[in-house]
Length: 464
Image (cartoon, rainbow, N blue to C red; front, top):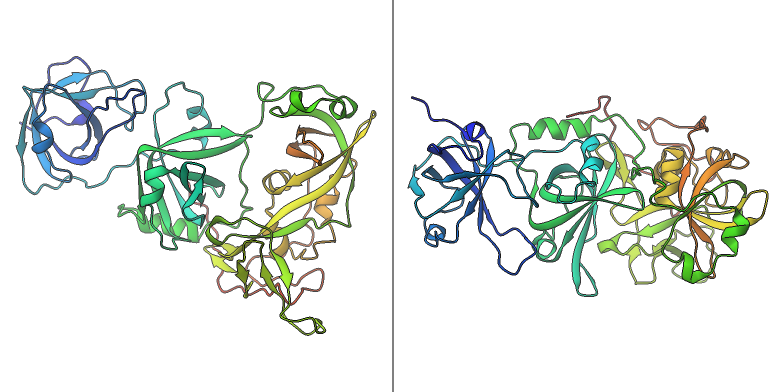
């Protein structure tokens, strides 16, 4: 008679023996000082379940070894825990004093388990009070390296996910410290047991105490995943925003009312108003070059080696932290142009106007990318608008259009536009240049922005 598997386990039902591999050992955060020991078990068919060790069974930690196979019997089948679960299963196991664990030696049982979420599942997972943790994967666009912020150590990894959207994964504390120091740009990164949240309308991922990261994990379909990214049809890489709701913002204000609000009242709030862009300042740069060396993110400035005539000299780029980019050449990561030392970011200075007043505002990278549907990098390198003082036509279409703006007010400086509702605008990129060929710039390229494209995109979009 064949043994039953993990899918047959139900809560509060008499147990039966199961053959499993122990994939992980972990101590999930429960909100108390005392942490319980858990194991992640997977059976022959690749199904998984969590097993908690009862406090009466103190010897089991010395018996069970990770990656080994066992026949487990006389356990208890219980309800799953209420928070921080890493497996979607109707039941969990309790390994008590009576439980027997028999080594099986070598068995053809999977050595890895993932239950990857689709992009459309993420927003729903931010709403539960005690959400299940999430598995996700993507191609690495950039990694900040280890950073120290106050008492916290972090690594921020920007991923391109399976539908062509950017999402930022933040690894915290011990997970960040143990993360690879190597350059993994362009590699496939899979993460298990992360939390999904929304900050200023953007989905983001955060590691937990039980998160594990895998670079190019040995999945049966790994090559298919790699091929899907290589063949993904060229799409704008946008840090997709979740639409901010009335719960996130205070609505119905005029610009005159917002201009009169005291700082103590508005410093932690967002406000929405109906307005139009009166003008976009032509005397300000509409995009900036940002240093991405080890997560720096400082603005890069052109410099020359001496004070002689610069007309025939090549500029280098440097930031206030002393990082220098001597070769600002771009290349392909899959179908996307990339330089691991710098990035182009929107930074648009404009004047908002309604019937009551005007307001100076700044529209930063993610907001403008979302509004236009084109990243700054693609606007400059693919569509050829590389003059930072000449505003692209698609951006000029925002002028005069009555739209809803969600604004963060700032003291003694221009307010920040966090979201623009552009449903009524159809943008035309008449001068767009196919990514298959190097773009001819609309304006003369400076000697510091050479373009070199060494690969070509494919034509199909991978979906789960």
